[in-house]
Length: 103
Image 1: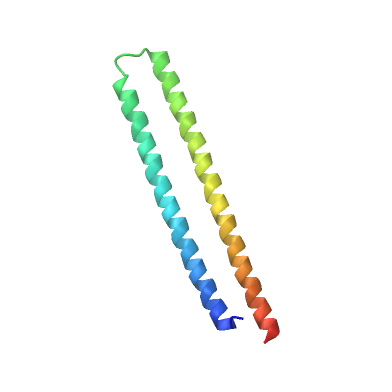
Image 2 (image 1 turned 90 degrees about the vertical axis):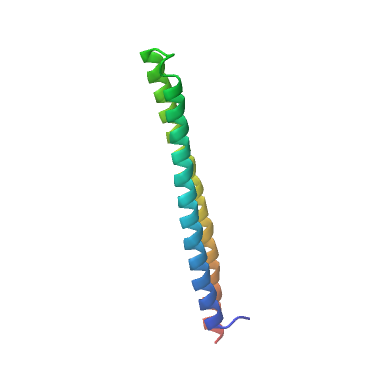
């Protein structure tokens, strides 16, 4: 059985790990959003001379909706990551409480 000090150190390490995971996830998500926006811009720019006004408007709307769906997926995955981390943290805190009770 781990001592209280060991469990507290483990909790601190876990919190730091979680913070770095969320930070890395947010950074990757922002890069992906920028790449998608750039692709949309390049596609719109490439077809600018070949399309009429209504077709351009439909393309912009389609791209906007695609970006919104992408943002929702990113937020859902981020929320799932945070819930998973909360469960891990709660498990360690329960271990700490158990260790404190047995002391």
